[in-house]
Length: 276
Image 1 (cartoon, helix red, strand yellow):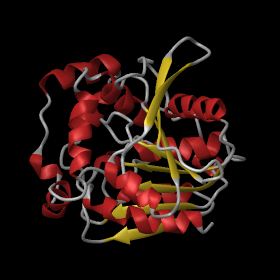
Image 2 (image 1 turned 45 degrees about the horizontal axis):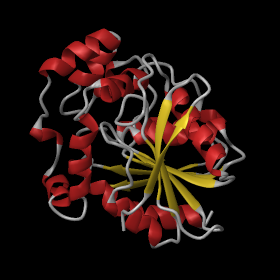
Image 3 (image 1 turned 90 degrees about the horizontal axis):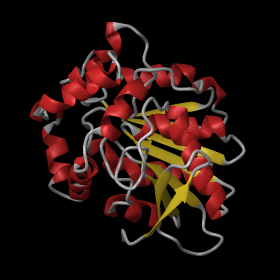
C-alpha cells in the first residue's frame, strides 16, 4: 500500500524539493500529507492505507534539509508550505485535503492559509501550536530541550543536536504498542529522515518557535484537530491554542492516546475531511 513514485522539483531559487505520489485515477481526490520531525516525506504504509480506504491519492514532500531536498537555513513554516504549492502546480493538482502529524501539523495549516482556494479541509494530528513566548507552551513536554535550544537560533539548535538523545519517557505504553504494530514504519522512516544529518530537524524546530509567516486566522477551510490527552511530546495545550485561533476548527480529544497512538485515528479523521 505504500508504493509511490518519486521526483524532484527545482524551485525558483534553484533548490531541489523531493516529492512522492501514490498515483491513481486522474480524478481521484488528493491528500497532501505533511510529515513529522524528523521523517523523509515518503508515504509510509499506514498513511497510504488510511488514504486508500477513502479513495485518496497521496502526495507528500520532503521539507528542506531532509533527504532529497536541499536545505534552506532560516526557513519559516510558510516557506516549506510554499514548496508544496510549487509541487502541486507542477503536478497539476487543483484541490486537496491537507493533513499532517506532529511537526507536519503547522505545515498543513500553512498550506491552507497560503492556498485557501486549493485546500478544502485540513486535519492536524498532535500538531504543534504557534510559539507563545510563555513557559506554558512547554508545559507537559517530557523533553522540551530541543525546542528550547531552538529559541537560541540555528547554531544553538545544531549544538544541541550533537549531544541530544531520545528520551524514552516521551512515549507512552500505547505509543510503543502502535510502533510495534501498524505504525512501525513511522519509526523506521524517522531514522531514515535523520540519517543524513540534523539539518531538517534543526530547521524544523527553529521554524516552530519563530514567526510562521502565516496567521491561523487566515485558514478558511474546516480543520479537525486530533489530539491525544496523554501526549508527552506535543501536549494537549497546543490543540487548545490552535482551536482558539481557527475560525472553523473542531477538536477531537482522545484522552488515553499519546503522540504516536493518536495516529490510529487517521482513517476516521480522513473520513471527516472527505465529507466536507
